[in-house]
Length: 471
Image (cartoon, rainbow, N blue to C red):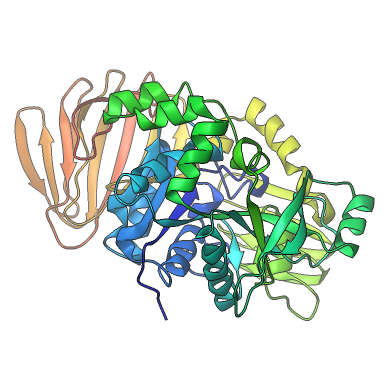
Protein backbone atom coordinates (compact mmCIF):
# COMPACT_ATOMS: atom_id res chain seq x y z
CA UNK A 1 0.00 0.00 0.00
CA UNK A 2 1.33 3.45 -0.91
CA UNK A 3 2.30 5.61 2.04
CA UNK A 4 1.04 9.21 1.88
CA UNK A 5 3.38 11.24 4.09
CA UNK A 6 6.17 13.78 3.93
CA UNK A 7 8.22 11.32 1.88
CA UNK A 8 9.93 12.64 -1.24
CA UNK A 9 12.08 10.91 -3.84
CA UNK A 10 14.81 12.15 -6.15
CA UNK A 11 15.72 10.27 -9.33
CA UNK A 12 19.25 10.77 -10.65
CA UNK A 13 19.08 10.45 -14.44
CA UNK A 14 22.29 12.03 -15.66
CA UNK A 15 24.59 9.08 -16.44
CA UNK A 16 25.99 8.16 -19.86
CA UNK A 17 26.33 4.37 -19.58
CA UNK A 18 29.24 4.06 -22.02
CA UNK A 19 29.86 0.43 -21.00
CA UNK A 20 26.60 -0.48 -22.76
CA UNK A 21 27.77 0.85 -26.12
CA UNK A 22 26.69 0.63 -28.93
CA UNK A 23 23.12 0.61 -27.60
CA UNK A 24 23.73 3.31 -24.99
CA UNK A 25 25.11 6.61 -26.32
CA UNK A 26 25.62 10.13 -25.06
CA UNK A 27 22.24 11.41 -26.26
CA UNK A 28 20.40 8.17 -25.43
CA UNK A 29 22.01 6.70 -22.29
CA UNK A 30 21.01 3.44 -20.66
CA UNK A 31 18.37 4.89 -18.31
CA UNK A 32 16.34 5.86 -21.40
CA UNK A 33 16.48 2.34 -22.84
CA UNK A 34 14.24 -0.71 -22.19
CA UNK A 35 16.98 -3.05 -21.00
CA UNK A 36 15.03 -5.01 -18.37
CA UNK A 37 11.49 -5.14 -19.73
CA UNK A 38 9.14 -3.15 -21.93
CA UNK A 39 9.50 0.06 -19.91
CA UNK A 40 12.78 1.98 -19.89
CA UNK A 41 14.90 1.83 -16.73
CA UNK A 42 13.85 5.42 -15.92
CA UNK A 43 10.17 4.51 -16.24
CA UNK A 44 10.62 1.41 -14.09
CA UNK A 45 12.33 3.52 -11.41
CA UNK A 46 9.55 6.14 -11.41
CA UNK A 47 6.83 3.47 -11.29
CA UNK A 48 8.58 1.79 -8.35
CA UNK A 49 8.97 5.04 -6.38
CA UNK A 50 5.35 6.07 -6.93
CA UNK A 51 4.36 3.13 -4.73
CA UNK A 52 5.71 5.11 -1.77
CA UNK A 53 5.42 8.80 -2.75
CA UNK A 54 2.92 10.98 -4.60
CA UNK A 55 3.74 12.20 -8.11
CA UNK A 56 4.05 15.73 -6.73
CA UNK A 57 6.79 14.55 -4.35
CA UNK A 58 9.08 13.06 -7.00
CA UNK A 59 11.87 15.12 -8.60
CA UNK A 60 14.14 14.01 -11.41
CA UNK A 61 17.55 15.51 -12.13
CA UNK A 62 18.97 15.01 -15.60
CA UNK A 63 21.29 16.70 -18.10
CA UNK A 64 19.76 19.40 -20.28
CA UNK A 65 20.49 17.29 -23.39
CA UNK A 66 18.09 14.63 -22.06
CA UNK A 67 15.44 16.95 -20.59
CA UNK A 68 12.76 16.51 -23.25
CA UNK A 69 13.19 12.76 -23.60
CA UNK A 70 13.09 12.36 -19.80
CA UNK A 71 9.94 14.48 -19.58
CA UNK A 72 8.30 12.50 -22.37
CA UNK A 73 9.08 9.15 -20.77
CA UNK A 74 7.91 10.29 -17.33
CA UNK A 75 4.65 11.59 -18.81
CA UNK A 76 3.92 8.05 -19.99
CA UNK A 77 4.18 6.91 -16.35
CA UNK A 78 2.22 9.78 -14.77
CA UNK A 79 1.09 13.06 -16.34
CA UNK A 80 2.25 15.02 -13.30
CA UNK A 81 5.91 13.95 -13.37
CA UNK A 82 7.37 16.10 -16.20
CA UNK A 83 6.69 19.28 -14.21
CA UNK A 84 9.37 18.30 -11.67
CA UNK A 85 12.45 17.79 -13.86
CA UNK A 86 15.62 19.74 -13.08
CA UNK A 87 18.00 20.00 -16.05
CA UNK A 88 21.70 20.36 -15.24
CA UNK A 89 23.55 22.68 -17.66
CA UNK A 90 26.64 20.50 -17.17
CA UNK A 91 27.55 17.27 -15.38
CA UNK A 92 28.96 17.77 -11.88
CA UNK A 93 28.59 14.31 -10.31
CA UNK A 94 26.01 13.24 -7.75
CA UNK A 95 26.48 15.67 -4.87
CA UNK A 96 25.65 18.92 -6.74
CA UNK A 97 22.72 17.20 -8.48
CA UNK A 98 21.32 15.89 -5.19
CA UNK A 99 21.98 19.19 -3.40
CA UNK A 100 20.01 21.14 -6.04
CA UNK A 101 17.02 18.82 -5.78
CA UNK A 102 17.14 18.73 -1.96
CA UNK A 103 17.23 22.52 -1.83
CA UNK A 104 14.08 22.69 -3.98
CA UNK A 105 12.34 20.30 -1.56
CA UNK A 106 13.76 21.98 1.55
CA UNK A 107 12.20 25.30 0.54
CA UNK A 108 8.78 23.62 0.62
CA UNK A 109 9.26 21.22 3.53
CA UNK A 110 12.46 21.32 5.64
CA UNK A 111 11.41 18.17 7.53
CA UNK A 112 10.75 16.11 4.40
CA UNK A 113 12.13 12.56 4.30
CA UNK A 114 14.02 12.21 1.02
CA UNK A 115 15.15 9.09 -0.82
CA UNK A 116 17.72 9.38 -3.61
CA UNK A 117 17.74 6.68 -6.29
CA UNK A 118 19.67 6.12 -9.52
CA UNK A 119 17.47 5.85 -12.61
CA UNK A 120 19.35 2.97 -14.25
CA UNK A 121 19.12 0.09 -11.76
CA UNK A 122 16.94 -3.01 -11.91
CA UNK A 123 15.14 -4.33 -8.82
CA UNK A 124 13.32 -7.66 -9.03
CA UNK A 125 11.82 -7.70 -5.52
CA UNK A 126 9.95 -4.40 -5.10
CA UNK A 127 8.41 -5.20 -1.72
CA UNK A 128 11.84 -5.84 -0.21
CA UNK A 129 13.00 -2.51 -1.62
CA UNK A 130 9.99 -0.62 -0.23
CA UNK A 131 10.43 -2.26 3.17
CA UNK A 132 14.10 -1.24 3.28
CA UNK A 133 13.17 2.31 2.26
CA UNK A 134 10.68 2.56 5.13
CA UNK A 135 13.28 1.24 7.58
CA UNK A 136 15.78 3.80 6.29
CA UNK A 137 13.25 6.58 6.93
CA UNK A 138 13.01 5.53 10.60
CA UNK A 139 16.77 5.98 10.94
CA UNK A 140 16.67 9.24 8.98
CA UNK A 141 14.10 10.53 11.46
CA UNK A 142 16.82 10.06 14.11
CA UNK A 143 19.23 12.25 12.16
CA UNK A 144 21.11 9.57 10.23
CA UNK A 145 22.29 9.67 6.65
CA UNK A 146 21.17 6.21 5.55
CA UNK A 147 22.25 3.99 2.68
CA UNK A 148 20.64 0.88 1.24
CA UNK A 149 23.33 -1.80 1.22
CA UNK A 150 22.92 -4.80 -1.08
CA UNK A 151 23.59 -8.27 0.30
CA UNK A 152 26.24 -9.59 -2.14
CA UNK A 153 25.48 -12.56 -4.36
CA UNK A 154 29.13 -12.91 -5.40
CA UNK A 155 32.54 -11.32 -4.75
CA UNK A 156 32.10 -8.58 -7.38
CA UNK A 157 34.93 -6.14 -8.09
CA UNK A 158 32.78 -3.49 -9.79
CA UNK A 159 31.12 -2.08 -6.65
CA UNK A 160 32.17 -0.18 -3.57
CA UNK A 161 31.59 -1.98 -0.27
CA UNK A 162 30.12 -0.97 3.09
CA UNK A 163 31.17 -2.63 6.36
CA UNK A 164 28.13 -2.61 8.66
CA UNK A 165 28.67 -2.17 12.40
CA UNK A 166 26.24 -2.62 15.27
CA UNK A 167 22.46 -2.59 15.09
CA UNK A 168 20.93 0.79 15.90
CA UNK A 169 18.19 -0.97 17.87
CA UNK A 170 15.36 0.77 16.06
CA UNK A 171 11.90 -0.81 16.07
CA UNK A 172 12.02 -2.14 12.53
CA UNK A 173 9.75 -5.02 11.59
CA UNK A 174 11.34 -6.20 8.35
CA UNK A 175 14.72 -4.60 7.62
CA UNK A 176 17.36 -4.00 10.32
CA UNK A 177 19.34 -0.77 10.47
CA UNK A 178 23.08 -0.91 11.16
CA UNK A 179 25.72 1.69 11.81
CA UNK A 180 28.42 2.08 9.14
CA UNK A 181 31.94 1.36 10.34
CA UNK A 182 33.78 1.60 7.04
CA UNK A 183 33.48 2.44 3.34
CA UNK A 184 35.74 0.57 0.91
CA UNK A 185 36.63 1.39 -2.70
CA UNK A 186 36.14 -1.16 -5.48
CA UNK A 187 38.44 -4.04 -4.47
CA UNK A 188 40.43 -6.64 -6.34
CA UNK A 189 39.01 -10.17 -6.45
CA UNK A 190 40.87 -11.50 -3.40
CA UNK A 191 39.68 -8.64 -1.20
CA UNK A 192 36.17 -8.90 -2.61
CA UNK A 193 36.06 -12.53 -1.48
CA UNK A 194 37.18 -11.52 2.01
CA UNK A 195 34.57 -8.75 2.16
CA UNK A 196 31.75 -11.12 1.24
CA UNK A 197 32.92 -13.66 3.83
CA UNK A 198 32.94 -10.95 6.50
CA UNK A 199 29.46 -9.60 5.87
CA UNK A 200 30.24 -6.49 3.84
CA UNK A 201 27.51 -5.01 1.63
CA UNK A 202 27.54 -3.53 -1.85
CA UNK A 203 27.07 0.23 -1.99
CA UNK A 204 23.95 0.72 -4.14
CA UNK A 205 24.18 4.52 -4.36
CA UNK A 206 20.72 4.83 -2.73
CA UNK A 207 20.38 7.28 0.17
CA UNK A 208 17.65 8.35 2.60
CA UNK A 209 17.80 11.41 4.88
CA UNK A 210 15.84 14.35 6.24
CA UNK A 211 16.08 17.52 4.14
CA UNK A 212 17.20 19.75 7.02
CA UNK A 213 19.90 17.29 8.12
CA UNK A 214 21.26 17.08 4.58
CA UNK A 215 21.45 20.86 4.24
CA UNK A 216 23.28 21.10 7.57
CA UNK A 217 25.79 18.45 6.49
CA UNK A 218 26.25 20.21 3.18
CA UNK A 219 26.87 23.58 4.83
CA UNK A 220 29.39 22.08 7.29
CA UNK A 221 31.36 19.79 4.95
CA UNK A 222 30.87 21.47 1.54
CA UNK A 223 30.18 25.16 2.17
CA UNK A 224 31.07 26.11 -1.42
CA UNK A 225 28.34 23.86 -2.84
CA UNK A 226 25.88 24.96 -0.14
CA UNK A 227 26.50 28.63 -0.91
CA UNK A 228 26.12 28.18 -4.67
CA UNK A 229 23.01 26.00 -4.49
CA UNK A 230 21.12 28.20 -2.05
CA UNK A 231 21.80 31.32 -4.12
CA UNK A 232 20.68 29.91 -7.50
CA UNK A 233 17.75 31.80 -8.99
CA UNK A 234 16.62 31.86 -12.62
CA UNK A 235 17.97 29.95 -15.62
CA UNK A 236 20.91 32.27 -16.31
CA UNK A 237 22.06 32.14 -12.69
CA UNK A 238 21.75 28.35 -12.59
CA UNK A 239 23.95 27.97 -15.68
CA UNK A 240 26.59 30.31 -14.29
CA UNK A 241 26.61 28.92 -10.75
CA UNK A 242 26.34 25.24 -11.61
CA UNK A 243 29.32 25.32 -13.93
CA UNK A 244 31.53 26.53 -11.06
CA UNK A 245 30.62 23.66 -8.73
CA UNK A 246 33.22 20.94 -7.95
CA UNK A 247 32.84 17.50 -9.50
CA UNK A 248 32.06 15.55 -6.35
CA UNK A 249 30.07 12.44 -5.41
CA UNK A 250 27.82 12.28 -2.36
CA UNK A 251 29.95 9.37 -1.08
CA UNK A 252 33.19 11.38 -0.98
CA UNK A 253 31.55 14.71 -0.25
CA UNK A 254 29.25 13.76 2.63
CA UNK A 255 28.78 10.06 3.45
CA UNK A 256 32.44 9.39 4.31
CA UNK A 257 32.63 12.57 6.40
CA UNK A 258 29.36 12.49 8.36
CA UNK A 259 29.30 11.06 11.90
CA UNK A 260 25.78 9.60 11.91
CA UNK A 261 25.73 7.22 8.93
CA UNK A 262 23.67 4.04 8.80
CA UNK A 263 22.94 1.24 6.36
CA UNK A 264 19.94 -1.00 5.77
CA UNK A 265 21.04 -4.43 4.45
CA UNK A 266 18.65 -5.68 1.79
CA UNK A 267 18.41 -8.50 -0.71
CA UNK A 268 16.04 -7.38 -3.48
CA UNK A 269 17.24 -8.86 -6.77
CA UNK A 270 19.28 -5.73 -7.46
CA UNK A 271 21.55 -5.04 -10.42
CA UNK A 272 23.09 -1.78 -11.57
CA UNK A 273 23.08 -3.17 -15.16
CA UNK A 274 26.49 -1.58 -15.57
CA UNK A 275 27.83 -3.94 -18.24
CA UNK A 276 26.60 -6.27 -20.93
CA UNK A 277 27.50 -9.22 -18.70
CA UNK A 278 25.26 -7.83 -15.95
CA UNK A 279 22.46 -7.59 -18.54
CA UNK A 280 23.15 -11.24 -19.39
CA UNK A 281 23.06 -12.29 -15.73
CA UNK A 282 19.83 -10.39 -15.08
CA UNK A 283 17.75 -11.82 -17.94
CA UNK A 284 16.16 -15.24 -18.50
CA UNK A 285 18.18 -17.71 -20.56
CA UNK A 286 17.26 -20.50 -22.98
CA UNK A 287 18.33 -24.13 -22.62
CA UNK A 288 21.72 -23.35 -24.18
CA UNK A 289 22.37 -20.54 -21.72
CA UNK A 290 21.77 -17.79 -24.27
CA UNK A 291 19.98 -14.48 -23.84
CA UNK A 292 18.43 -13.33 -27.12
CA UNK A 293 16.75 -10.01 -27.84
CA UNK A 294 15.31 -8.93 -31.17
CA UNK A 295 15.61 -10.87 -34.43
CA UNK A 296 18.12 -13.58 -33.50
CA UNK A 297 18.84 -17.03 -34.96
CA UNK A 298 21.53 -19.18 -33.35
CA UNK A 299 23.00 -22.64 -33.98
CA UNK A 300 25.54 -24.42 -31.80
CA UNK A 301 25.78 -21.28 -29.63
CA UNK A 302 26.08 -21.38 -25.86
CA UNK A 303 26.22 -18.98 -22.90
CA UNK A 304 26.02 -15.87 -25.05
CA UNK A 305 24.22 -12.52 -25.12
CA UNK A 306 22.75 -11.92 -28.58
CA UNK A 307 21.07 -8.52 -28.91
CA UNK A 308 19.78 -7.04 -32.14
CA UNK A 309 17.94 -3.73 -32.37
CA UNK A 310 18.16 -3.65 -36.16
CA UNK A 311 18.06 -6.54 -38.62
CA UNK A 312 18.72 -10.25 -38.23
CA UNK A 313 21.57 -11.43 -36.03
CA UNK A 314 22.71 -15.02 -36.75
CA UNK A 315 25.43 -16.99 -34.93
CA UNK A 316 27.04 -20.40 -35.48
CA UNK A 317 29.53 -22.37 -33.41
CA UNK A 318 30.38 -19.76 -30.76
CA UNK A 319 30.12 -19.54 -26.98
CA UNK A 320 30.52 -17.07 -24.15
CA UNK A 321 30.33 -13.98 -26.37
CA UNK A 322 28.28 -10.77 -26.43
CA UNK A 323 27.05 -9.50 -29.79
CA UNK A 324 25.21 -6.17 -29.81
CA UNK A 325 23.91 -5.06 -33.19
CA UNK A 326 22.46 -1.62 -33.96
CA UNK A 327 21.71 0.13 -37.24
CA UNK A 328 25.16 1.73 -37.51
CA UNK A 329 27.52 -0.20 -35.21
CA UNK A 330 28.08 -3.77 -33.97
CA UNK A 331 29.99 -4.93 -30.90
CA UNK A 332 31.43 -8.46 -30.64
CA UNK A 333 33.39 -9.39 -27.55
CA UNK A 334 34.11 -12.11 -25.05
CA UNK A 335 31.39 -11.90 -22.42
CA UNK A 336 34.02 -11.90 -19.67
CA UNK A 337 35.53 -8.68 -21.13
CA UNK A 338 32.43 -6.49 -21.12
CA UNK A 339 33.78 -4.48 -18.16
CA UNK A 340 36.59 -3.27 -20.48
CA UNK A 341 34.29 -1.75 -23.11
CA UNK A 342 34.99 1.77 -21.81
CA UNK A 343 38.49 1.48 -23.25
CA UNK A 344 37.11 0.43 -26.62
CA UNK A 345 34.55 3.26 -26.59
CA UNK A 346 37.39 5.73 -26.03
CA UNK A 347 38.94 4.54 -29.30
CA UNK A 348 35.60 4.76 -31.07
CA UNK A 349 35.18 8.28 -29.72
CA UNK A 350 38.53 9.27 -31.21
CA UNK A 351 37.96 7.77 -34.65
CA UNK A 352 34.16 7.79 -35.08
CA UNK A 353 32.84 10.34 -32.55
CA UNK A 354 29.30 10.44 -33.98
CA UNK A 355 28.90 6.72 -33.17
CA UNK A 356 29.25 7.46 -29.45
CA UNK A 357 26.94 10.47 -29.50
CA UNK A 358 23.71 9.42 -31.15
CA UNK A 359 21.87 6.71 -33.07
CA UNK A 360 20.50 6.90 -36.58
CA UNK A 361 17.12 7.37 -34.85
CA UNK A 362 17.12 10.59 -32.85
CA UNK A 363 14.46 11.64 -30.35
CA UNK A 364 13.26 15.23 -30.23
CA UNK A 365 10.59 16.89 -28.06
CA UNK A 366 8.25 16.98 -31.08
CA UNK A 367 8.85 13.37 -32.21
CA UNK A 368 11.72 11.52 -33.90
CA UNK A 369 13.79 11.49 -37.04
CA UNK A 370 15.69 8.62 -38.61
CA UNK A 371 18.65 9.07 -40.97
CA UNK A 372 18.02 6.78 -43.94
CA UNK A 373 21.04 7.67 -46.05
CA UNK A 374 23.87 10.17 -45.92
CA UNK A 375 26.72 11.10 -48.20
CA UNK A 376 28.75 14.08 -49.42
CA UNK A 377 26.39 17.07 -49.78
CA UNK A 378 23.16 15.14 -49.02
CA UNK A 379 21.16 13.50 -46.24
CA UNK A 380 17.81 11.68 -46.34
CA UNK A 381 15.61 11.51 -43.25
CA UNK A 382 12.30 10.05 -42.21
CA UNK A 383 10.66 12.57 -39.84
CA UNK A 384 7.74 11.71 -37.56
CA UNK A 385 5.95 14.58 -35.80
CA UNK A 386 3.61 13.82 -32.90
CA UNK A 387 -0.03 14.99 -33.08
CA UNK A 388 -0.29 18.66 -32.13
CA UNK A 389 3.51 19.14 -32.11
CA UNK A 390 5.61 21.47 -34.21
CA UNK A 391 9.26 22.08 -34.97
CA UNK A 392 10.93 25.44 -34.39
CA UNK A 393 10.70 28.32 -36.84
CA UNK A 394 14.15 28.03 -38.37
CA UNK A 395 16.41 28.41 -41.37
CA UNK A 396 19.60 26.83 -42.71
CA UNK A 397 22.58 28.70 -44.14
CA UNK A 398 24.13 25.81 -46.09
CA UNK A 399 21.38 23.48 -47.27
CA UNK A 400 18.02 23.36 -48.99
CA UNK A 401 15.32 20.79 -48.16
CA UNK A 402 12.67 18.85 -50.06
CA UNK A 403 9.71 17.58 -47.99
CA UNK A 404 7.39 14.80 -49.17
CA UNK A 405 4.40 13.90 -46.98
CA UNK A 406 4.03 10.13 -46.51
CA UNK A 407 1.12 10.07 -44.05
CA UNK A 408 -0.83 12.57 -41.98
CA UNK A 409 -1.41 16.28 -42.57
CA UNK A 410 1.43 18.80 -42.66
CA UNK A 411 1.00 22.50 -41.88
CA UNK A 412 4.03 24.25 -43.32
CA UNK A 413 5.46 27.75 -43.19
CA UNK A 414 7.81 28.23 -46.16
CA UNK A 415 9.12 31.76 -46.40
CA UNK A 416 6.03 33.97 -46.79
CA UNK A 417 3.79 31.02 -47.70
CA UNK A 418 1.55 29.07 -45.33
CA UNK A 419 0.47 25.79 -46.90
CA UNK A 420 -1.11 22.49 -45.93
CA UNK A 421 0.03 19.24 -47.54
CA UNK A 422 -1.49 15.78 -47.66
CA UNK A 423 0.13 12.41 -48.53
CA UNK A 424 2.06 12.38 -51.85
CA UNK A 425 2.32 16.19 -51.87
CA UNK A 426 5.65 18.00 -51.48
CA UNK A 427 7.37 21.34 -51.10
CA UNK A 428 10.87 22.74 -51.68
CA UNK A 429 12.57 24.97 -49.10
CA UNK A 430 15.57 26.98 -50.39
CA UNK A 431 18.43 27.68 -48.00
CA UNK A 432 18.05 30.81 -45.84
CA UNK A 433 14.21 30.53 -46.06
CA UNK A 434 12.45 30.62 -42.73
CA UNK A 435 10.32 27.51 -42.38
CA UNK A 436 8.36 25.46 -39.89
CA UNK A 437 6.68 22.04 -39.87
CA UNK A 438 3.57 21.37 -37.76
CA UNK A 439 1.21 18.46 -37.26
CA UNK A 440 -2.33 19.83 -36.78
CA UNK A 441 -3.90 16.36 -36.96
CA UNK A 442 -4.71 13.62 -34.47
CA UNK A 443 -2.40 11.03 -36.08
CA UNK A 444 1.41 11.08 -36.42
CA UNK A 445 2.75 13.04 -39.39
CA UNK A 446 5.43 11.26 -41.41
CA UNK A 447 7.52 12.98 -44.07
CA UNK A 448 10.65 12.21 -46.07
CA UNK A 449 13.19 15.03 -46.02
CA UNK A 450 15.98 15.28 -48.60
CA UNK A 451 18.73 17.74 -47.68
CA UNK A 452 21.16 19.07 -50.30
CA UNK A 453 24.00 21.51 -49.75
CA UNK A 454 27.67 22.01 -49.09
CA UNK A 455 27.07 21.16 -45.39
CA UNK A 456 24.28 19.01 -43.92
CA UNK A 457 25.30 18.86 -40.27
CA UNK A 458 22.69 19.05 -37.51
CA UNK A 459 24.17 22.27 -36.16
CA UNK A 460 23.23 24.26 -39.29
CA UNK A 461 20.05 25.52 -37.63
CA UNK A 462 19.16 29.11 -36.78
CA UNK A 463 16.05 29.13 -34.57
CA UNK A 464 13.72 32.13 -34.41
CA UNK A 465 10.90 30.69 -32.31
CA UNK A 466 10.65 27.41 -30.44
CA UNK A 467 7.88 25.90 -28.33
CA UNK A 468 10.45 24.02 -26.26
CA UNK A 469 12.76 26.97 -25.47
CA UNK A 470 15.77 25.48 -27.22
CA UNK A 471 18.63 27.82 -28.15
